[in-house]
Image (cartoon, rainbow, N blue to C red; front, side, top):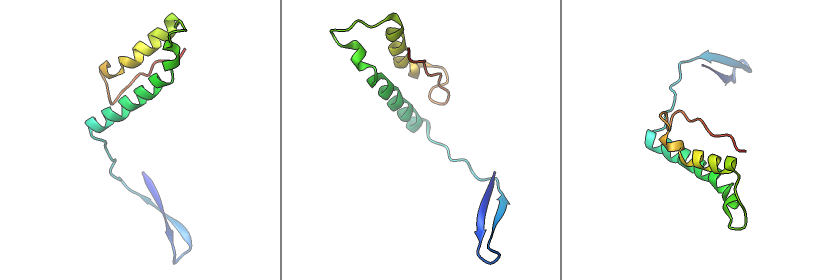
Amino acid sequence: MSRQVWNTDTQVWDVYEDDLPVATIPTEELSSIERSERDRLLGQTDWWAMSDLTMTDAQTAYRQALRDVPEQSGFPNTITWPTKP
């Protein structure tokens, strides 16, 4: 990875090739972040489940797939998000 630093003496950008450390998020925190995203996506579809509406099979399957996200084998590092119908 490279980074640029402004050189005040030469008035040009100096480029440095560094192996900068990659910040990692603890698994518990990443899991919480991904569950929050799942909850947000579910919340966008809550209106589908109102008593005066009938959800399509695709809508029902989508909502169930969202609920199942934490059960995926790679969760929380690798997630296959379902496609909204």
